[in-house]
Amino acid sequence: MTCPHVNTLPAEVMPDSAGACSDCVGLGEESWAHLRMCLTCGHVACCDSSPHKHATAHHHATSHPVMRSFEPGESWRWCYEDLRIV
Image 1 (spheres, helix red, strand yellow):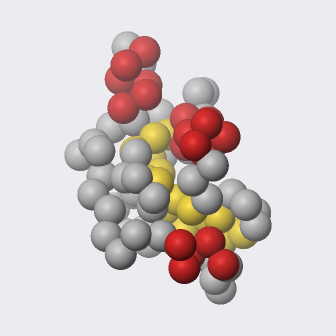
Image 2 (cartoon, helix red, strand yellow; image 1 turned 45 degrees about the vertical axis):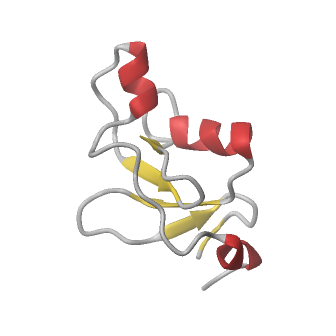
């Protein structure tokens, strides 16, 4: 599956964290459920199963449409605009 937003993504984006939700770390939090990475800017944030839901908050703050799982062995992507896996 795909969506029109995938075509607007940069060819390559580097994560801004090696394996932590930078927003949670900034709050002094050390636990989250899973990590997601924004495919527009590389921001790594916690998923909606985490208390702060920073990945979704990042989308609302920036309108960056697509993120992917940042968990080892996972490569699925989610489009916030189209509300589907792409």
